[in-house]
Amino acid sequence: MNQEAMEDTTNEISEISYETIGRFAAIPHTFIEGSKHLSLHARWLFVALMYYRNNKTGKAFPTYDTLGRLTGMSKNMISKGIKELENEEQEWVWLDREKRFGSSTIYWVLLPIPDYIDPPF
Image 1 (cartoon, rainbow, N blue to C red):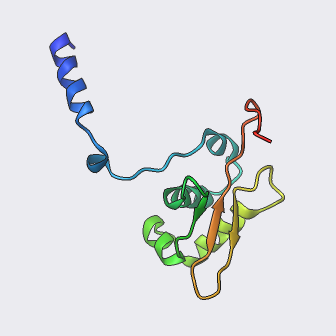
Image 2: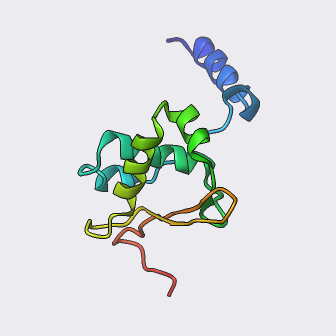
Image 3: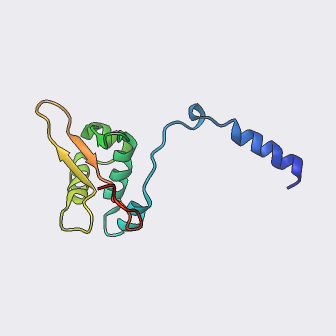
């Protein structure tokens, strides 16, 4: 590729904006590396919850219907995936939740701190 073509490509990329690509969810490397034992449904559900997660509070509160529309999963599959992400017998618990009466459930999407980072406490 010649210099002029490279500059044209760079200009096109720099013009891509949030409005062009839409929302996105960042998936932590610790989840990618540490979730091999989880089912594909649980992993995809984690991605969907990260999509709805508030980065300041760590909370997400989509309904089962919302998760079903986004992932294509049935309510039964969502329920199983959530239980899998909450399983305390695994190396890391990825999810905690609080059921609210008459409202959607609050999910805390938990992100592990890698060993090479000193925790702030």
